[in-house]
Structure formats: C-alpha cells, structure tokens
Length: 208
Ligand code: VGL
Ligand code: ZN
Image (spheres, protein in one colour):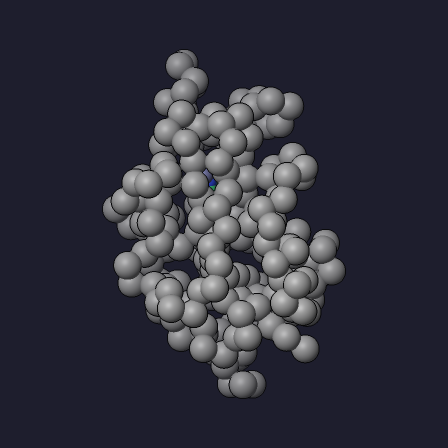
C-alpha cells in the first residue's frame, strides 16, 4: 500500500477575497498542512487559464456568470475570470505548506476546453500526466481534498477511482461553490455511489 494526497486547487482565487471565492475555502488549508506528513506522496493541482479562457463569462458578451453555454462540444458553466496564468490569484495559498509537494499539475490551459479534473480535461481526452505520475510511483491509494467539492474535487476523485486507485474523499477538507443549493451534497452522494470512500481528517489521523 502506498498513498498519495492530492491537494486540489488551493489557490488564492478560490479563497476568500479571490475572484472565484469558495465560501470558507480557507478552512481547509490547515487540514491540508496537518495531513501532508503522513503521505508517501503529495501532489497539487493548479487551475491555470489563459487570460481569454472560454470558461470566463467575460469572453461571452450577453452571458452572465453561472450561465451554461456550449464550449466546443461540451456544456460549460461560465465563471468570473480566475486563475489566470502567472497572476497572484493563480498562486497556491501562501499559507499552504508546499515543501512536500513533489509535483504541481496545471489544468485548464486550453482556451476552448475546461478541465475540472486533475487527471483529464472535461472532454476526457487529454491527460495532465497525474495518472501516469501516480502509477510510476506505485501509488495504490489516493486521498483527495481541496476546492471545490462540486467541481474540481468531484471530477478529480471520480477520475482517480476510474483509473483504479482506491480513492478517499477527506470530507471535512473540502468546500464547494454551491451555485445551486444542494450541489455539494449531490456531488458527495455521486462520488460515494461511484465507489469513492469518505473519511474525516480526524478519523483518518486517529488511525495513523
Ligand atoms: C473550479 C470552477 C472553475 C474548481 C475551477 O477548482 O473547482 N471551479 N474552475
Ligand atoms: Zn477554472
């Protein structure tokens, strides 16, 4: 057994004061810091968009944040401009301990294609390299935490499970956007249904 922790999108823009602030997103950082030393491998994902990314409402005159459009062939929720490559907002939180992170996987770099999962784009075609990275390091068990429960955490955990990793969601170390109320609990139910197991950081730490 060899376990990896995936820190999903712990970036300034998803934290309070950021462009796409996830309510209470800051509360997960200290849990992420506390857990990292217990894993064989720690990696992070980083939403990393060009400034004219197609998921930005600003690129679609007449549309508003939260609208759903078609981007390429795929339905796409429109977001405020966020995590623009090289911006302060795209940086990992300065409060996050980064010494143990061996690799950061950028995603959402293609203008016309979004990528919620840390493994694949939303069309499921292009890999970020995270899957192969975990396999090459003989990882069997993947733990997922971060932002946002109903988007990137959900997609990352589902792909992890599909790729064959035993996959856990650290439930108290995630927060969601909740565009519609109930989105987070629906996402958690969907992950569980798919085979992702849920654990709290306290319970998991007590077993180490
Ligand atoms: C995310 C919306 C847009 C996320 C990223 O990290 O969950 N959500 N881009
Ligand atoms: Zn994004």
